Image 1 (spheres, rainbow, N blue to C red):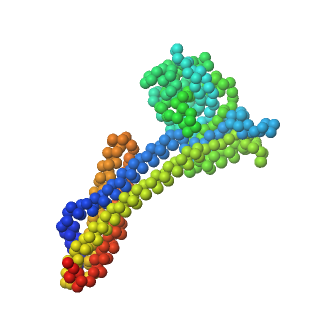
Image 2 (spheres, rainbow, N blue to C red):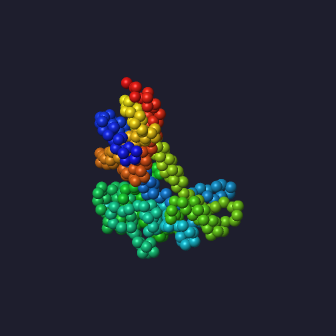
Image 3 (cartoon, helix red, strand yellow):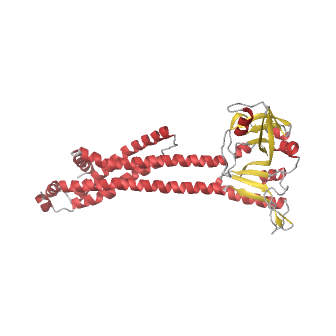
Length: 406
């Protein structure tokens, strides 16, 4: 008997009990739809988390002045003035795998605009700072390399500072504010970024050219920190090690002596991403396993009932020449057809549920091709696995006993 004929016989057998066939397939439909939906939601959530982590700068390496010893007392971050702009230039030109670099200064100041004032952080940075932090602008533009070269009095405001000085939803570009009684022209406002990993409000900040901060606000020639962005996450550790070796050589630090700087990466953020991904994967694997096993048990149960009901039919077919393998194949095909039809419908339902959850709950969801292949493959494997025992039981029936069965 050909596989085509066997499939036709199996389909006719399933069509004789449409309600039971539909209810049996429903278990597989629910299982596959649950897998598709959960994988879509999990993928969307993971991509959203990774986007937020990238926005914080996962590839970021921060070099700060400090970590040196005076009279036996170890000094911490910011305790020395050994970092210079030339160090930043050397890192850019001599360390492979560096994408962006910005020297930086930091201070606090009272910022005044009209009759409003606000105490905030004033950061001196270079033009690549928003690229390192993946920080877009809401209004205006960032200051230019010419502004940095000329130590221009231009400022880019965080959203909190902009709101406190000029009011909510107001474009302050072109307005004048005073920092330590010096006038600065607002050229842009950063998009809201929210709270940082250390608990600080990232939007409560004013960015100015680092040269302006050095010469006109702080009166220094050094920098407090150098922020570096590696070209890829996999190069962060190697780039950090190369920066350490370069700065030790530039600062003439003898072997065995402690560094006069500190190099830090966002390892905590990277570990959060890894843990989130691992937890999400385990959760989705558990849901997929439970859902599809339940559907498979339903198929096995119905196929066993079908074998019992059709015992005389099986005996008659074997009596007229059907081989055991033909009977085995027929019931196996019935089981696989149930699984595949249920899987196809489940995939369609999963797409609909994922779209519905996104629309109603505003939860990011993305159905990937891998999820569809995985769910459909599991459905087919479940049909074969749970259909084999009933099919084998039918194939091993004795024809004479089967014909006598009432």
